Length: 288
Image 1 (tube, helix red, strand yellow):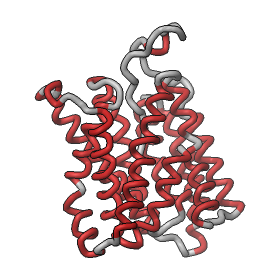
Image 2 (cartoon, one colour):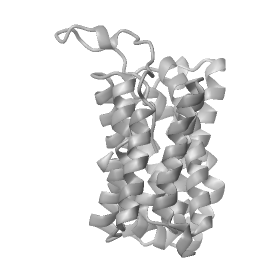
Image 3 (spheres, rainbow, N blue to C red):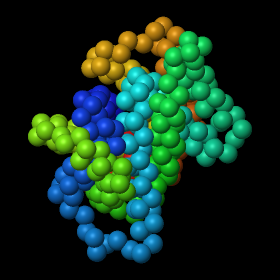
Image 4 (tube, rainbow, N blue to C red):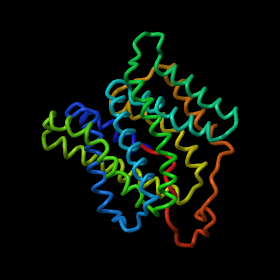
């Protein structure tokens, strides 16, 4: 989570050169190339019925990143992460099939209101809108990641989806890159950011998921908005007010509480003896 938010903060410099769409596209291109070289997925293993899930996962992954970086261009990083978090939190509430489960997205929404402080009249509605669109993509990303992750072992599904994400965002990203005419250091920085996310950070998520349940992972993931505020403060000098800190606390509380009672049937990894070799990695239930 720290690496993901560091990569988002570092992306601000690239956004200034090639725009949010260009930055997202460069990250997808460099990240997809690195993942293909590392994972070397077998294209022959792709069945016809796998194609729709792979295409949809690539679509929502690419635009999740594009919309989020467009939000970061306009609103503080911590606020953008908290607003985006409403997406997967709402999906979790709906999937819970219990009316009381929807109380947690409502609590998180209250936290977001404290974060954005609309009573000051300075809220950037366009930035919040982009973050909400990113959140909708994040919620869908969770669903399709599980579908693809159940079909492809390890990091192979990710290595197939990220290049697809690059293709889907070409129409938005490539014109911005061309018009920005970036210097060599911008491309080098974008490649370095791509190495952090998606390559290293998603790889660490895979390693974590080999050793913990989805519920435990989802509960820890609720801390991500707080990491967004922390990195925003340390890297971008974005200082939150006291009310905004309370708002972040509400979002984290809602995300943690939403995981209570939620679980997914293990595929055998959680029941392995510590001395046994590990099988294919479980799918990542959330990302960027």
